[in-house]
Length: 251
Ligand code: PEP
Image (cartoon, rainbow, N blue to C red; front, side, top):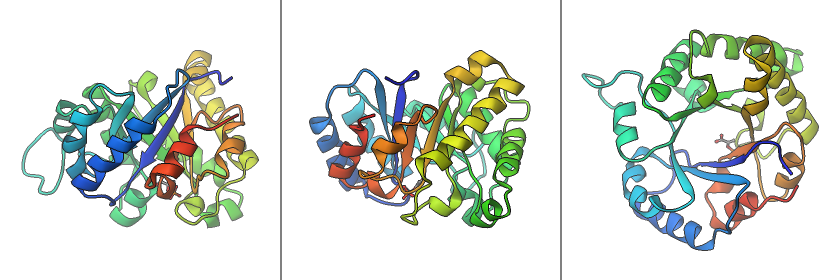
């Protein structure tokens, strides 16, 4: 039995039209077992958030966004604010996904502003951190993680709302997941960081997700690790059968 409530989150990235999203969540709710020990979250593209919010309103499935902008409103063409997301029932926002960092140039400083805005609107940020392959090979994993945490959490006072997703960049969308012990080692490091810089209580309550090529075949062994509290799933969250199997993990 897990110490903390597990969180199984699907990051759909730029996949599924509003109609496809409606069909998917309708089936998801219909086929979902009842769980007390785990929470289920879907993070569709912005265009699907409102259409699925009606379907998920009284369901156990929560809604997350994949990004937001850190200003409330104004001349920011193409951006979406926290205020807009909150109003349609979004509870979580992914911040600093490696695709945002590497394709769209997001820095830790930008991500810091974003997580603050998420909390200001009473939503929960899922802060993604993780090392690149060359950084792991140079033995810099912990240094990279520590640096990302330090910069993204500067003057942030919503720590009780924070969720961390450890996502080694080399494992995202590559089919090459971190082994459970590789992931656990970093999760322990992250938990220790929070114990050292915040408190034992904050560290013990912190939800730390693993992300990177999670699938129905590796979910059980990943979730068997003591410090892995859930997963952030990309590709395997797009198909109903595989997402349902991941949600139904057995420790
Ligand atoms: C992700 O999108 O955060 C992710 C981990 O993707 P995938 O599961 O496809 O590797």
